[in-house]
Amino acid sequence: MSKRFVALGDSFTEGVGDEDAGRPNGVRGWADRVADVLGAMDPEFAYANLAVRGRLLPQVLGEQLDRALEMKPDLVSLYAGGNDLMRPKVDIDALMRRYRAAVARLVSAGARVILFTGVDGGDDPVFRKMRGRVAIYNEHVRAIAHDHSCVLVDMWNMRQLRDRRMWSADRLHLNSLGHTEVAISTLEGLGVDHALERTLLGVAPLQDRRVRRAEDWKWAREHVVPWVMRRVRGESSGDVIRPRRPELLPPS
Image 1: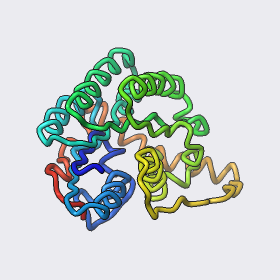
Image 2: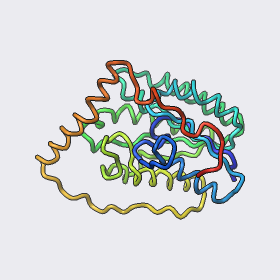
Image 3: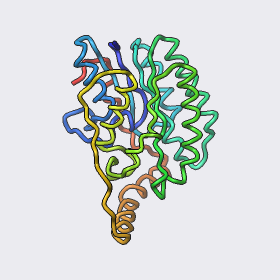
Image 4: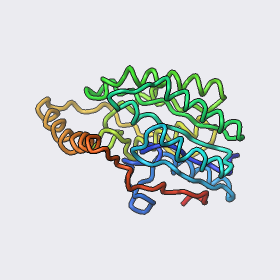
């Protein structure tokens, strides 16, 4: 059983979208849920989360990888690259060579590594345009997971994550329901028993086209425009954010 779990990545692993005012940075997320289950099984278990929202893959590796290795973890999660895929230009092959090298370092250090594919955004008219990029990214991740015997959480095939009710208002980050789904799939991939329960939402109600269009415009004003303006100014949502669990501590 793992005793030292370190989570690396961007907003997905930080827990953005799953608000919890009682936790650092005001979020919880799937990684906290996994750590809570593992911690309940072993009083010596400790957990660090170095993920920071807005980080590109090179930033995640440059800022977090060495820090994680210094903690001598026996379990590491790594998800990065989603922010890179949203940029106008991206060399996915070059990114994933760095990703593969990082995984190799973690495995060589004795850590069991958890990797994730990207979610299939094919049902969303905006993120559908990124579907080809995500599919290429995912094939790299699958190959790396296979070659290094990693635990793979295949979010592309988690069809429940295609339901907008699993996502926060910004449509970029999972809400508490979505983060719980990822936590369950992660624990199942690790072969760990747990009491978390999946949410059965049923068929989504049909929505009037005019209402949907109004919601889309509201989303664009409140979330897309600020995101674009940050890109223009060279800013990131994580510029003033620090890792919320920078040290190995018991889950809480």
